[in-house]
Length: 125
Image 1 (cartoon, one colour):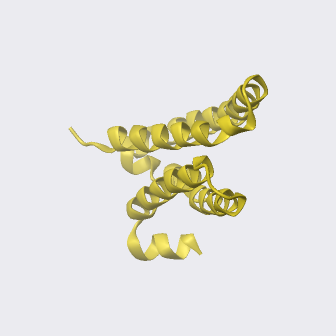
Image 2 (cartoon, rainbow, N blue to C red):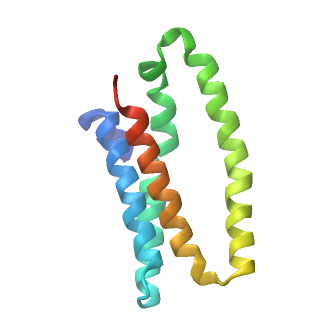
């Protein structure tokens, strides 16, 4: 579904909306509210996160140029694998050391950091 929307609106718009949706979902998870709010936040976060990596990979040639796209995508794949191992284990250690209530704020920090990094990296000189 989001692929269809990306074709209509452009990958940049969908990517920015997805990043903001991730922040919104993480905030819902972090709120001290009834459990259904956290579940709704998880649904929003998951739906918003789904197209982020494919859209970032898809737009690589536009950002770095066609001559460097293949190597850059290789680095993206490697970083995704490393992040897929380190981030969940780091959050698991944080939750084990503190409590499950640390999950929401940790997700907010990660989503906000990703959104900020994308905004900084998207600026053209």
